[in-house]
Image (cartoon, rainbow, N blue to C red; front, side, top):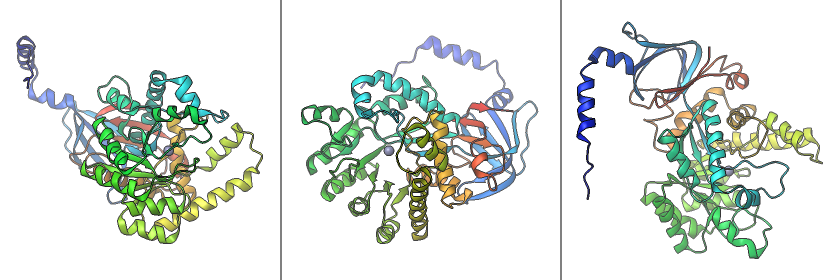
Amino acid sequence: MHRPRIHLLILCYFIINSGYTSAQSQETNSTTYIKAGKLFDSEQGKLLTDYMIKIERNTITEVSKTMAIPAGAKLIDLSDCTVMPGLIDGHTHLMTLDDLNNDAPMANKLLFEGDALRVLRGSKRAKSWLENGFTSVRDLGDSGPFLDVALKRAINEGTVVGPRMFVSGPIIISEGGQVAGLMHKYRAVISDEYTIVRSVDDAINAVRVHVNNGADIIKICANNSPNNTSLTIDEMKAIVKMAHRYDKKVTAHATNDLAVWEAVTAGVDGIEHGYQISDSTLVLMAKKGVALVPTDISESLFNKLYDIIDFKWDREKNMKRAKDRYKDRLQRAISAGVTILTGSDNYLDFKMPQGEAAKNILVAYYEEDMTPVAILRSSTYLSAKFMDKENEIGVIKKGAYADIIAVKGDVENDFSNTIFNVTFVMKNGEIYVQKE
Ligand SMILES: [Zn+2]
């Protein structure tokens, strides 16, 4: 094994130059203080008034009511804002943006867009999520052959700007993937987008391949909607067992009650979508501590869908029916004691900044009678806890990364407008948005 070699001249340069700055100025240069009019305590689910936050480099080192601020220190006054941990979008597809009027979006991605252009476009979308207050995302596939790992690396090294990414790599799925109607002779192309599993042994190896390629989480499809195939419980059990062996969580796309029940029975940690779930399955989820990521749609995005696509169905009737169903399922899940996490699943081109479109997921939950405080807790502390990161992100407390945002307005009484009014975004101690 090679030991890293340090260039002596460079080392000498740093040692000599560091002598010119006093300890005092080093402290003030790397220290930032934030004055918060309101502070969201995501752990407790409480809004506190008049708090100070001390940040040293990329870490929060103190949160208290009063704080001695040295003369000349960098002070950011957010006393007319609500300051909160950076939001976490638990279900993104940064490498995918489907044109709502394109009948074959998968062919467009795989055959005409290509990997390089997908990542470049994905990097622009990543920036949009950050600028809208999402300092972390869980990117769950539809990202080609580990393009999400590449984008994550580029963000972490500072090559491009974006949120912290926790990535799944390709979705692990059964025959056919989520591509319905593709002619048999072109089936091979599906393997460019998905990891296809044909047996329990395949399932075990798929997890090894994903972990080896840098996946942070394993995403599976319990059912392949809109396609009609699905993984077996034994295949899912093998995936869960292997993923947990490597300390990776498993989350399952599951749209109907049978798919949810099978995935939960197999031991997954999270359910994505869960549009139809029976009460008994919700009870099982609560008992096993399985989280639900309801990827519901807000009324305003629903209207945009109708503006862009020439649907034949009645707009008002269809929206009411969908929203009633979402609300019923969400409220039953909350009553059953299921942990709700935030996930936009925003991969459709609504002709607006993608991060802003994604923010609509918070509004969707609000329209379905979830309280602002519960929504924000889902989008911060609970989403971090799901990834065992609740001491690092999703919280404003000593030792956590300085991922901090602020919104102007009344979070409790004017949630749907205030949540879009992002005035400040800091990620890892660096400021990306600061509006007057
Ligand atoms: Zn999705």
